[in-house]
Amino acid sequence: MSPLFNLLLTGGPVVWILGVFSIVSLAVVLLKIWQFWGQLKLSDRSAEDAVHRLQEHHVNEALLLVKGAKNPRSSAIRDTLETLNITGLSEAQQREEAFRRARGRVLELGSQLRILEVIATLAPLLGLLGTVLGMIEAFKAMEAAGEQVDPAVLSGGIWQALLTTAVGLAVAIPVSLAHSWLERRVENESAGIQDAVERVLTLAPSLPKAQAKKQDAK
Image (cartoon, rainbow, N blue to C red; front, side, top):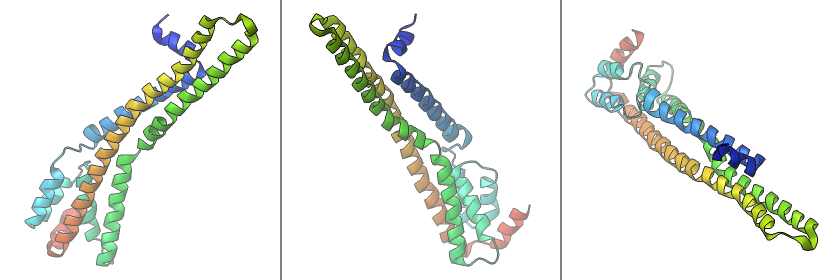
């Protein structure tokens, strides 16, 4: 019988729940890592290159750089350029629509992070609950034994009770670190998205919109 299986048997239902928490949190972390650096390619420089092309008034080249890109900043630039070509909107409405779309990109980045936050909060509390329940059982056994209390049995019950707290902390600490790291990455990318949108909107009055419409029609 493996040590891990013995641990699950000794800790009881609380440790089983914490084990599920650890599996879920690991899956979320791996998913976000794949999403950030595999699917969305946060390290892609296409957004910065596109802004440089816009500064030089090369709208078509900028659109080609961000066309089909999954990088959030590139997508935000593409959304903003598309918004600027929507007829019938005032300048204020164009800005509002551009930032509305940018907020959607940020929400996509932060999806699933709430799960890690909840696990990091609940894991130590569940561990403490398991310890309290275990201590209650240990002292109930001591009361039932009366004067025939075996200190070895009592100490064994206590360490089993404390085991759930240790497991809870073992789950919560790495999950909390992973959540903080991913959340910080989302904050940095969110600031980058906002900066990209603001730079495009600042350049908007001088951009040749006719070219942008022509490229968008293609």
